[in-house]
Every structure is written in structure tokens, then in C-alpha cells.
Length: 291
Image 1 (cartoon, helix red, strand yellow):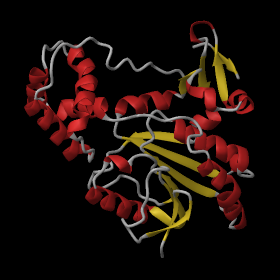
Image 2: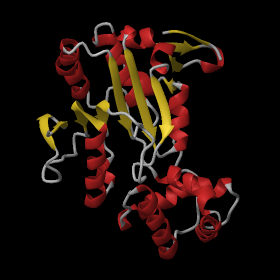
Image 3: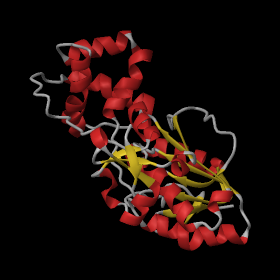
Image 4: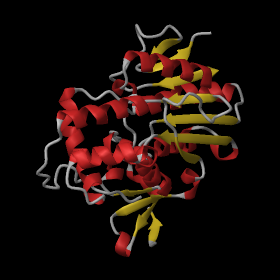
């Protein structure tokens, strides 16, 4: 690949396949039950058109002729097809430096705390990382604003249920549109610019990529493979897709995986108020454990 100092993305063409079929009520009910049971995402009747559009590409890949045929295929090949079904349904909207006030809070509040404690081993979890813009942003903020970061033991775990977005995130390659929100000096410092066939694309440099580990994780799993705790947990714009019971279970998990002086970040439209007393609000959509 030709890249020079200065990730490559794919365009979402969903809804442009010219599908002529209709997703029947019975098949829709089956799909949404599977999605809820396996991922915790609740699909209301209002999401039927979305499900129809997103499953179209998969059905065409399998050279099938109807949603009913695909529904039967899922039933007969449940374990093998489940990941593909979930990949089709999950929403993966994300951007670099999205909800930037969270990263400003890291710079102005969290990093000074860490310096005062002489913290040298740092663990951060980006839960629901999608295509990787969030963990790469976190890595840039750490390297830019945490004094001596390059000499510290900093690791970022980036997890998602969707294997397709994880594969893209692991490459660290993005289109010019994807990186438009990164200030030019940062873009030049932390990304390589594509040349020749890769013109217009950018790839994250090794200092970022070496800090991040991408892994598939279903937040609904009974147990998680991580053994240690985290200083920061980002789970932004994820819980809005879960029902209250699932949210309660998830925040109990986050409580146990967060160090006593750690922080939990959620999306700007999400809140723990009235849901759990295990965390206290310290800033806009930023929480700490109640000890």
C-alpha cells in the first residue's frame, strides 16, 4: 500500500439495491426476537423498514430470493449465520472527536489527577467502538495531552458485537471524509496520507495502532474475558438501544470493571439518573463510581 506522512472507508449503499420484496410480519418478528435475545437491541415496529433495507445486501450475497428464504436459512444455520445477521442490523454511526467535551474533560481534569497519582499503567475500554474512530481519538488525546504518555503503559480495549466494523477499525484506514473532523496538525502527526491508488485515504500511524486492541464482545454475554479493571470506560450512544433491564445489568458490569477512581462516559442523550445509584454525575454525561 502507498501511504505517506500526513484508513480507508467504505460507503454505505444500504437502501440502494432496488429490492422488490416485502418483509413479512412473521419474518420480521423472528428477526427482531433473535436480535433482542442475542444483542439486547430492541427493534420496534417502526424499525421494520430499516431491517428490510439492511438485510437486503446479505440476502443478495447468499443469492436468495426472499426474506422468508433467509429466515429459514437462519433457523437452519443459526450459529454460523448469527454474526452476519447482527452485523447487518447494528448501527455504526461514529466520528473522530465526537462529543469533544469528553476529551476536553480528560485533558483538563483526568490527566492532572493521574499525574498527581503518578499513574503509569492506564487501561481504557471503548465499548461499542464501531469502526474505531472513538478509540483512535482517545489514543490521540492521550499522546497529545498526557505528559510522558509514550513512556507509560497505556492500553485501549476496543470492542463491538459487529465483526465487520472491527475489521475496519483494526486496519486504521479511513477516507478523507472520515478524518475531516481531525485538525490538520493532528492529522499530519498521526496519520499517513495515501498515494496512487490510495489517494484521498489516510492510515493511522503505529503509535496509535499499537495502543489499541480490537476484539469482538457481546455486552449481553454472561461473562467477559477481561480480567482487570479500567480507568476509563466509554460506552456512548449504545444503551439507548437497550431496554431498562438490560441497561441495569450492563451498568452493574461497568461498575465492577471500573477502578474506584475511574470514570464512565455515556452519550449526550443518555443518562443514569433514575436508573442506578451506583454512579454519580460529575460532568455532562460523565460519571464516577459511588463507593
